[in-house]
Length: 324
Image 1 (spheres, one colour):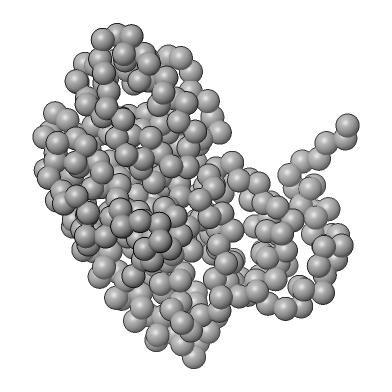
Image 2 (image 1 turned 90 degrees about the vertical axis):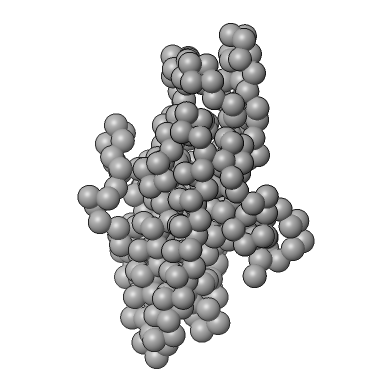
């Protein structure tokens, strides 16, 4: 069977795009985004004056997401494209390059963050999970407002005002997370997860993070990697382990099994949102709700002090409860 590289695939896909909707490309499809975190920024800043915002990934794991023909069609017909960047959406790189080659407005929101603030893991490229640091992610809001203002200059002041209001809300969130994580007893301030999506959270809010898997969910940890985590859990008498909503939790199960075999029982805490937010239409399906959920869940499970329903009293209000 003949195989193609990802770039060759997209070259064919773009070159034959008329086969799946050439006529539609003459009609703009507004703003297209990738992850839910990026989509949320754009919707908040854009308000009711920006074009329709279409998120491609939903609750999918961005590390392993392969864009479909429908995704490429939406990207091609978009007026503006926003994505996270730093190779988070690694398998979409060829698609982004082709969209840029078509002269489209396409922006990585993490370009707003100073390179010196990025964490550089051994994989050779910066850790992309910057939204876990609210203060860093807030800077991305400014980039979105700036680019929307250039695209739609008549409403530039409106987007700038939305940015200002939203960043005030993010500052409150940042303060809340700092306070409740600090309330965890220092010896218990260790966050055990499946993959290393929380390093920015750890640096900002002063909690140690340990996981068997690196920043990319496509890279399998070894038996030795799992044992290192188990040893730390037992030595420090860590009480809880945290699954992630968008990540296969087979390594969580393995850690629990090995700990149990060595005489240490771990509590499985509520799922954390790492590479994707909660269900759309819920408070947890917003960026603020996502981080509120994570921080509150971590603090309460590790012996800290945090209100059961979080910073705004909205956590766990149910799938049918729309976020406000």
